[in-house]
Image (cartoon, rainbow, N blue to C red; front, side, top):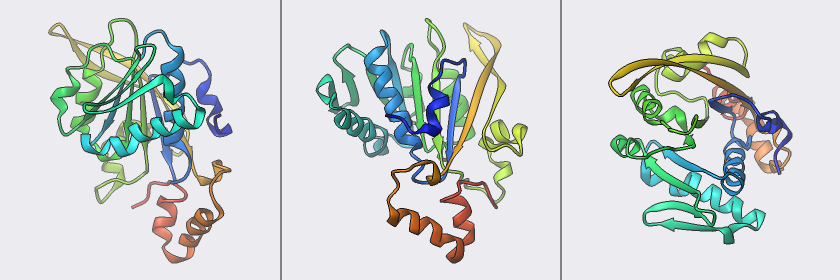
Length: 240
């Protein structure tokens, strides 16, 4: 079911934050949709938050990808795909909830999430990310966080972007790596520091054997027509 490039991510590990980034057509978002679909069916407890910059954009992104995946696996009858409020319920009572960073207060209202998927994480701000991390609390264990993104930053120098400074700067020049970070959290009025392990996996369309010949030709054409976008879109590299 899974592309070979993602097999290492399926092994048991103590990674708190999975970062999947790189070029278009690499299958990174589909992989997360597949993993979460499988987890929602087999885990005794599963409560996943689907997050994007705006709530209205989730339906055409993560919500639809999970629905499409369930249909392709022939297990869509096990789910109820709700549009109002937007969410997904599995027959075993496991759930997917949706939140947009345009309403950060609603993220804090979710109790005991087990998983969280932020699509297009490069579009959220540092304040959004800190709000998210300090809101993901589970009384029964850790919360697994997935960040999927393309390497595009809305600033003149990508090295000034918070995502780069948090995760990529300490690990240069590696494209894929494992690292750790400390984050302050407040529990019952007392500040604590927790260590989070993260893993970044860089992928491109070359890692996806199902990319059509037409899409491959488009990606390759950028090498001569627009070299900047060739580096960003097909190769998934950070450039200024």
